[in-house]
Length: 80
Image 1 (cartoon, helix red, strand yellow):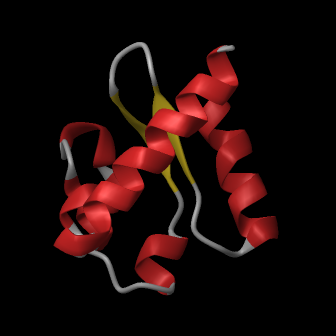
Image 2 (cartoon, helix red, strand yellow):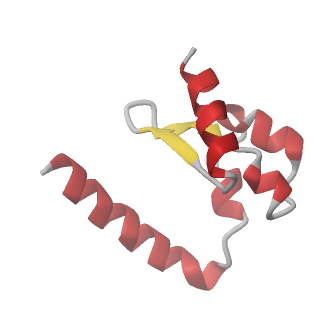
């Protein structure tokens, strides 16, 4: 039911969006924008919950530290 709403919002947005389940430590959803705009593997996006770190694997190694820093700062902002 939640994914149905996310799909609707993604169609309206038209970009790339994803949702992380912070309690399970995994991706819960990724929009088809990753396939349509960035050419990511459709099957891996549709089954992202089982793919582990597929999105991270697509990030240039030099950008990983920037992403990690952003994730830490975002987590502190959300949980403070």
